[in-house]
Image (tube, rainbow, N blue to C red):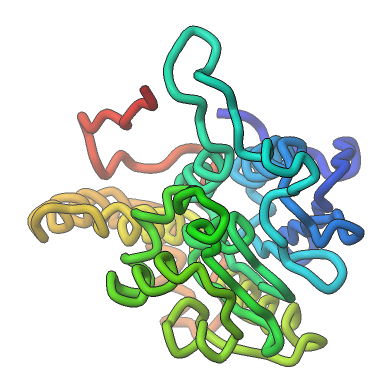
Length: 295
């Protein structure tokens, strides 16, 4: 297990994102405001590195993702025109080239920290599908969103065919995917794509309020395990799988220093100081399970 980064000695030398930790909250800001924070391979690699750093850092207890300027993310950078999505006949060594958006959402899916999207403006294509594995989405009341892939002659990407129906239901997911239309924040709220709408100037404050409620009250290891259980059980074949996994979790956590502190602080009517660290490792809730490989 990697040690946590030293914030004084480790430079956050990213080009297309900003990485800021304060009050145990990491804010990742997509930072290409002159291009409406359009997605690039550089942004992808920096986001992957940012989530690796966050998971290794016990100071980080929640993550907020937002955009610089007036957009969240306008989707893929279309500077190459009609060749934007042409990845050739295959990847080196054969096989189908991996979709970059999918690589990112799979990394967010595996995060040990809760992730909040603060959608401050237009979020189109990968700019909205990248938020689907994030745990809570808040949006500015003038934001616009769109799963525009069919209007560009491609298909929904970033694993959105798995995530979107689970988030909003199959009927709403298929309507947005088939029409490819761009819709307003009020439609996103009605469709349960976002949890709440806020004036633009209040959006980040609302996201931070939620992040602080998590960071200031909940045991980080318990949050990480709850996140794993919730997301993984979306694909479970039977509730018995959840029963087995949460029984393992209860057995492991029931003997932890955290549970003793949690109960003592409750009885003594004081804030809890949870000693267990995510970086020390998590109990195995799914022993023997092999992670699927690409190929």
